[in-house]
Length: 130
Image 1 (spheres, rainbow, N blue to C red):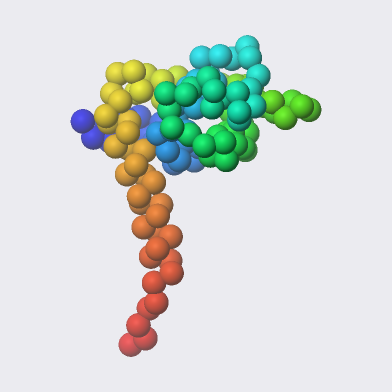
Image 2 (cartoon, one colour):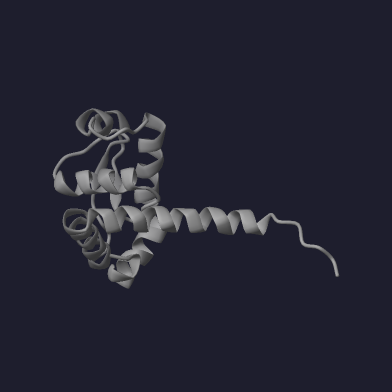
């Protein structure tokens, strides 16, 4: 299976809000515990099967907040709270891909990440003057 087999809206969502497979697992964890609030330390303890540092968890939580996927309370705790039906649908599509096509999802996430890195590297290449 190829990345093109995933819906275009999911691919765009991954490009914007899901930088790594670990981030996907964190987001899906929050989705499955919608009625609870979490700190980065709480998340690390709860999903100990995934290798994630506190700084990475905090980075992903802040990204999810920026993307409109989580809300943060005054105490600094996060809760899954997408601010649109479209975001909720994207997370459901992510969950479906995670459950039904995990290898395709992993490849897609890392292909997108690699292309972002290559684009950044290309931006810093020195151009030869003719």
